[in-house]
Length: 168
Image 1 (tube, rainbow, N blue to C red):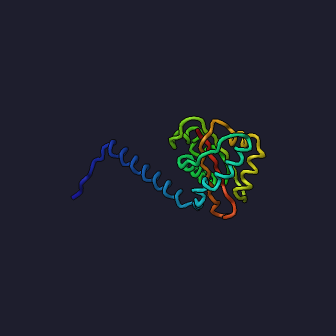
Image 2: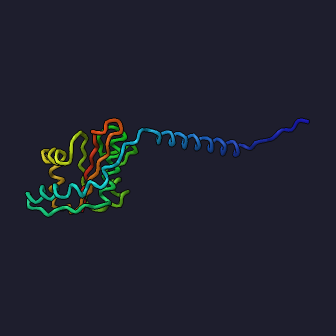
Image 3: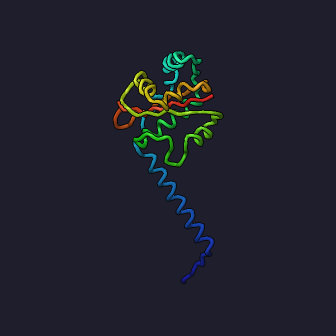
């Protein structure tokens, strides 16, 4: 005996959409298998407090306070840059600095310095102090807090992607 089943157009469309959704999830899961850089640079803000205090006091400015919220924003950006192997203030998802700060709950004026290289904390600040824009950010009298982080490149452990986020 032969039987036939009739499938409605709505069922076909739902099945197709479900299959497309599963394919998209599989694609996202595949992206997570990419070499992930290590994030041991979290918590580096406290190491930079004295360096930043010296820089700011030489300009007659008060010290900056390490801030975990700003450090988290810095760590996210450093991780993004390391995963893409390039410096950028914008992510691949079109998130610019302002939208990233908003997403991290950072309100008010903020600025970001980024760097890539095989150097330590002392050299990092030396480089930034010799760059007009970076220097201006660190000496902005409106800022009272900061977060600094780096992420090592997963392929070259000496290469670090740094991000400094300054805020009110």
